[in-house]
Image 1 (cartoon, rainbow, N blue to C red):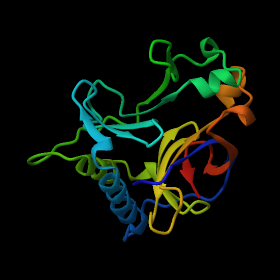
Image 2 (image 1 turned 180 degrees about the horizontal axis):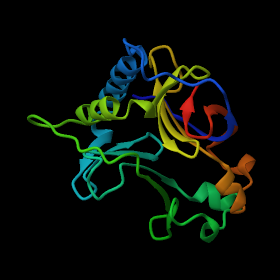
Image 3 (image 1 turned 60 degrees about the horizontal axis):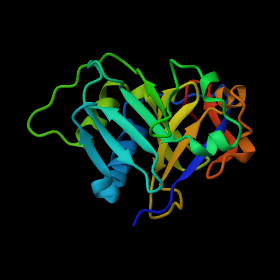
Length: 215
């Protein structure tokens, strides 16, 4: 059974250091793929394909979703994060004050959804497509989105504005299989006391220039 993931409301620090995507041997890119494959294998039936969204959907043990589109050129979000709004509402969130272009609150489901457009690349496949195949396409075409977070020994995908989805480099040696990282400022601006969001940790995660690149 997969270990309980950690979710973080993360302060964003601007750093001068940047990951290079131009190395002749891209160790980080290759290792990010193999470790992501291990996460998908471990989750098993918690990773599915949603025809309506044309996306793969990964559901964490506590219900948060990470989604990645089968084709970035399609008319659906390239990626999305979705999670329970209740802990944020209980911590003071006024949902109507969140930026509506970036945060979609559905009162019927009680969820907050954050969709992202990452590029316009069309992905082509040969034969049956898997979740792993699509992630490999993301790395092949948008390598700059993938980084290594030394603080947690995680790889991650930058979603923009300091928001990230991360997974352990080695799940056998890490007690945090996956991490959802959210920039807290829009929530703070909408009334949230981040120290009171139950189930989330308020801390600092170092990223480059607020774009989600990890040191």
